[in-house]
Length: 606
Image 1: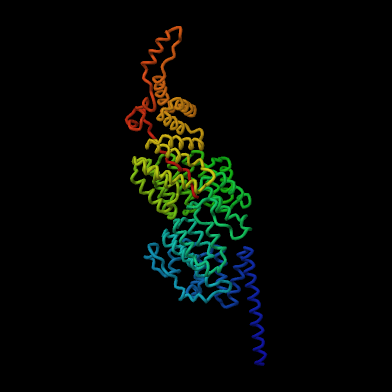
Image 2: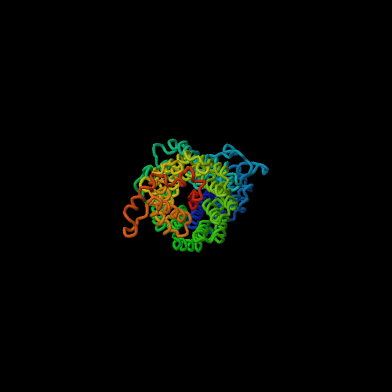
């Protein structure tokens, strides 16, 4: 009898185990099919049948998490003490508090920090992996994956608490633990947490050889995704690790970003448009594509895209970013700010929306509000130089040159080879009348532009060439000044200001006929150009003094013409333009007030 009872118990136990195993598979199947209510129902029954085994409690809590029952899931784990013994359960419970926006509770559970320390930490607090017993895993998860996931989660919590420096350290640690943790890599890159040098240093210090062996696949992929405005030409990116990746959309978007930062907007647009045909809602591609539409002034395409995004994804910040960019492009600043503000509310870490928000104020010369938006962007994008660059531009527009220079220097410390920053340093030197230094900066910026885009200088750099011309003119290098202005004219053939500059230099060179012709062209482009009008009248007067009147033979004898010619004093070189020489330029009523072009306000990052 006793033997029969034991046998019967064994049979029942085996039957129970088979039932549990069958139901566990059923729960996973329903999760894969996104039928979370069914998964939750049967997960609850499995947990009861297995007497609350840790793996079954975890999957029950996971079903609650997937149904957005965050507090219920966290309470389930805490009541059974699994957050103290099982790292995966700790991860899930902390994730629940993060999703419920209870960041203090999430961090305290993860690190054990007291509430008065939360959010004020200046260094990374450790997660006690030894106390957790990382070997106490649930089937299907590795120790390395769990450690990197916990570190990444901690970084997310610190970022939510606006402690971005500590968050960046957590993301770095997560990558060091597992180089395949793309979430950590993406957070560092997309949230602009690292400068160029820090990104390069990170890439060289990651343990690729230990974790990937001789395979260079991961390192090459990451190298393609790093900052797109670094000191490398567009065509100098490393070769792809596999030929089939030539059609990969993520890598295509990375290439498009390089074209964008090189101001080759047409090529960038061609790539992003092709990507969106294959994947219409590619999250990384959309901000770049929207920025391209703004730069190329494709109003109708932007209007259509914005409507589609708002209809399909009203809770996504990039949708309202597109709407705000549309209104910014058509010159309606108030609705632009309203929709850009909504974008930043939905995604407070969305840097491009903050930058465009600042641009909308700058377009109306509301410098204080623009700088406030740029300051917010600089707090969110510690590794990006653009907010500091724009703050410097606004300071320059308010004639605070000293403060502008400080911000340009900060921007240069983040991205020392960026031609936009170098150009603005030249503008500051020009305004300080240090023309030699200004010329050096402008030449360096032009060299960088040609390195980045070896085939063609984008029209965006017309201001740089004109400013080089102004500087050379100040240094009395008139031939060089003329050459730079003519190069600028090739980039923007209908710019009346450039034509005026060419006419002015021609006048300084004594080429009065050419100067008159150019001033006429400038007035043809801009009829109310007061400088061109005044200069045209003055040069014509000079030409009349230089050329004696032609008299009709019937009116005056030939001898009189000879006498007139003999008494006329010829004008040679620049002598007839003494009031226009550089020494007298600032004193003359006809002086050319050079308005240095604070270029590149419309540039966005994406």
